[in-house]
Image 1 (cartoon, each protein chain N blue to C red):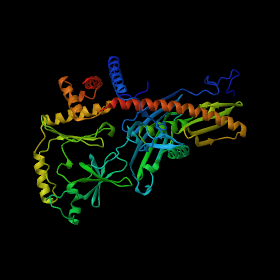
Image 2: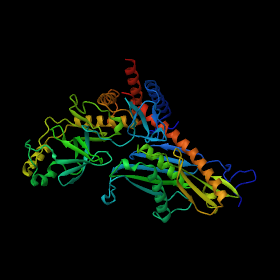
Image 3: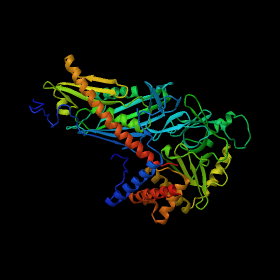
Length: 241
Length: 318
């Protein structure tokens, strides 16, 4: 199948290094300490953060830092055919991956004896849910006022028809080519997540990786805008004394 | 523009009016203080030639001072810190807080305070019934449930904050203790300002208002003298029976609900919650003949936003 036509356009009309439209919104779950909605094209994720709060399972308590828990779930209606299982292996793996990524950027040592819960719900899945979840979680954590080293942002890239492609959608993702998901800390310039589910030659990997990092930086820019706007809004509504 | 949406259906005119009010608030505040909002990893400008102290919410990376939370940069002498907005309550000794008992443990109660951990109220930091200073006996310990049980709302003061973040409370005064016959409202702690008075008695309505620093606000019927805590079982029964007979009048209950809804509206809009503003909002709803259950509707939200803009403008002109 042809994923990039001779004019250099992809199936959904994007160019190889073009991202899908991003929509980010803060404060969508009113009872949560922090929450966010993140959309990348047709992929749509809601993140809710609770905490830092009193630990629920005392045996898991950490004396020197906070416990970070993460739950990823896909809505039954998020894909074309109805999903039946709730706790399948894929969800468990993704919860773990996202938990590790977020734990790396939260300053957990500032909140001993407490726990932070991150809930991620995929409303629509169209490829790149992993990245969308990490971006949504970052926004929600920042909204909850949890101290972080840096904003963790993530983006995926792939390699099809000998072209590196940024931000794969579901069709491109399931084409069988390599799918590289990269998570970075843009300010500290560090990689926190790197996953690839096929083989790529070293040189090709480098270009695909570089493309994904560029994508991450673009997303980080967008996330910063949204957060700054939100912070300003909260401050001027509150008003000076 | 991205903004915290009101989860309310607004008609076209209401939307325009609301946006105009918000814009006015924005213009009022931007002239008041220059832009000091920062977000995570936003760099904070500091004069490196002079020494400075980095406070909460900051970290130094490669000689650059970065924020670790979203908020507003505050400077006090050499100290530079970031004041967070939407974050959990950060306790300070001496704060008056309102909380809900989550657990009755050995010699202590755990109190939920919207903090990173539950607060601890020790039996020994409570005044005894007979107002005598004495050691707490095992009998006292067994009678703890006569004082507070789970889900009771209590008011207390922060005694100490231990290094590991454990929060100790005390209630060594008759003004602290169990709160009954009223409403507990939860707002974001950043909307509550520290002041000298957190206990308010609104005489015209016969209502007590306690604005806890942790964002928990109590609106309840006025209690004349805080009854001493009953430890004795027998006494406690008669005491409960006495209380049952005294009904709160409908009028008082309505005023409590009106005040409660006023606070809810203010919290929804993200405006600071002070006695003055709450009273003004409640009076506004009265003067506009808005029913208590209509106060949470779109129209009243818009009206409150407009009046707040007007109020702040008037304040600035003074």
